[in-house]
Image (cartoon, rainbow, N blue to C red; front, side, top):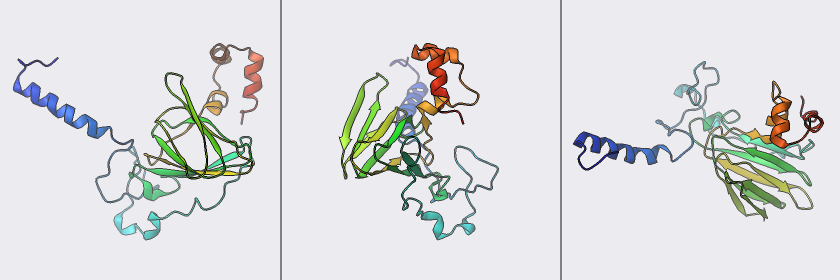
Length: 222
């Protein structure tokens, strides 16, 4: 602990730490030190992002993306699909600290419980009616039914979902403060991992028998 009797050097050091820490935690991705850094996927070097394409090879199209125009195919087990605009699909986002998803829902479609380990999320409902919910680290469940033009925000790392509760299709756009927020889908992570999580772990965690775990796992085995 620093006291009034501490040396001037110790006091100055502590003041510098207090000043620097808030700035280093403002965003999920590090701040860029250049105007842009279009991802170079051919480079073998990757340190918390991709290397930059040489400036002389950068073209205008690197800064534009039309991949969110098309409706996604919702004919899957969840009845919903995510179309990402992150650094892998839109290389111009590299080091920018932001990305966007288009989320399409068929009737009754679900974007299943999941989390984003590297970013907070905000979203806006464009069409339809969505039940949006998340669970805090204290196991408090927050939710609301949203209509077109209404927004939501999900704190970084918390488990959340969106469910289409309207009569037809639904559409939402979500944004993140990371060029690659990552996604951990709870059900596929637990029951579709490679190699599989031992049954002894899952039966104890969920307080059920092997038959229940095996039945659920069979739906997620690839």
